[in-house]
Image 1 (tube, rainbow, N blue to C red):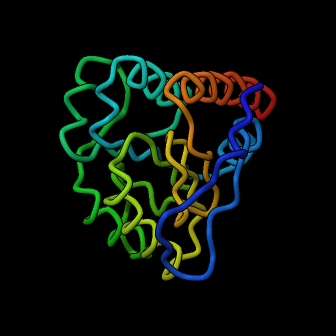
Image 2 (tube, one colour):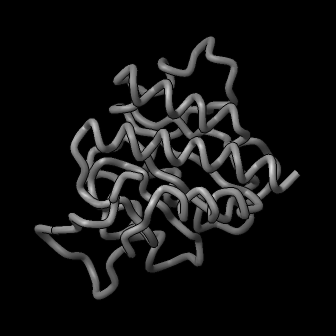
Length: 177
């Protein structure tokens, strides 16, 4: 088991609440219980090892919002991925009348992966302060504005944590059915 909660050092803060450190198994349990989860990926997902894991999460049944130029990684992968600007998405997620990327309604759990920390933290700050959404960072950087976040991880530890998350998502999905 990868310890994803040990290094949560932050260099700047935004507000009085910071993300709770989370282990992959706990993150998987929350995602499995979500009614409408959404995986929001940034351009760092184009790293082939990270992309493989993002595709695995999507194939489990989590729709993907591809931000930046990350959409090109999902072409011909057989997953539901839609392009959207991350800052626009942050605004839409706070709008209760927004039908979602698939037209099926509002999301309740937002999972972020492979973003530039300084971009996604601003979006998460808005979601933290103006919505009731659960936000989970499964990125290699601790994101203090998420509801819950992995700690700061090395590339190898991050891949192990994602593998553990995926394994638990698969197990949780089988249990839920």
